[in-house]
Image (cartoon, rainbow, N blue to C red; front, side):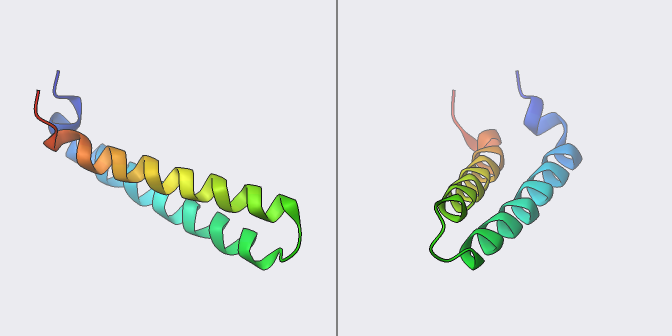
Amino acid sequence: MEFWKEHPVLRIVLIAVLFVLAMVLVVNGWQMTGQLAGLGIMVLGVALLLAALYIYNRPFQSR
């Protein structure tokens, strides 16, 4: 099944939303210097960035 190749607009919108949300989380977590919750927020942001990269690369994986 080539879902991501068949729906490029959905893929682009999802990547853009994940990227913006991830950057907001990373910056807000960075501003919470000295707090453990800030680290957790930044880790969540990095996980969202990795999810965006996964969605970007998914159509190019060989089967």
